Image (cartoon, rainbow, N blue to C red; front, side, top):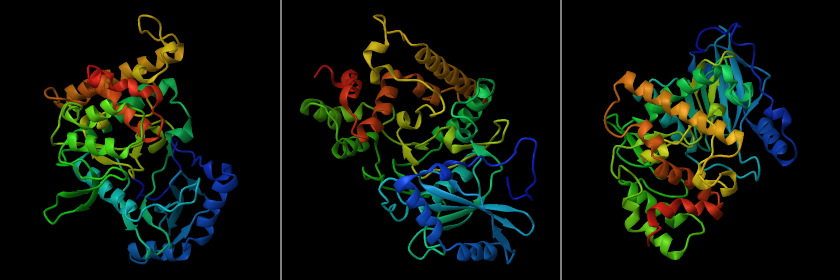
Length: 383
């Protein structure tokens, strides 16, 4: 990737990092505090040691996301690495839980080992109070491109098929990773297998989808009647997923063009930001990428649809067409790769009732139940 000496390319005309400069108020103060207190000299020294004494310097550009600050280190041979520092919460200033960055590091290793998904190589990961930089950080290859959201908020129509195809290839790879439990990737065992741990706010790891749903229902606040809640966390928990037992695929947690790096011609260079990833039941692992627009009818306002259930709004129709196009691309790739039997990613995407249920889970977790509780009618409506 970017371990070659940096040089301008016709498909990369520079980083389009504006988020840091657009911060204001409390969020700006949080970012500035990290910028001032991070031990940049120690971080530079750590990078120099990792490359056997090769000197490097910190470039002035500052990249930001909601969870990380990005700086570029350029070595004397013009190789560039990214220093990715973990940020406190931009809205309340609270620190992230210790160990989160190491979990992400383990997930990167899993993805590199088990798939062909392009991800930047991590050279250093320090997560804990003894970090060289004073905060958890990674040093990784610098991808010469921008995340899709920095190129354009919406994928340009002329690049849509190219982007959907690249994302579908990555999505199929994630869906077909075979893991024994539902949970985050927390370490590596002596035999080379990966150790799994709890999902923040839910617990685990879980051996079955039913165990996951029971724990999720216990820890989540949402507006369901007591009978519906008992149904969800009781006997119906065994029926909510097609595959109650392993293997389980990998769920990125925030898979959209905001976390995919492209060159200026929308060629995928890498999938980044795996901090929310965990091995999940197939319905969750199969959620549409955030770059594919569309609204699930069960979770939407009824006035957006006519008496026949068809979408009234042109944007809703366009989003539905985008999802159908994405499914068609997934099917074509599956056939080309020999995935023609069993429960495939395309099968999960087309299973509307279970897909609607999986889409509702993060909405419930955000405390926004309201009409989203309609999604359970198909499972426990007869109770």
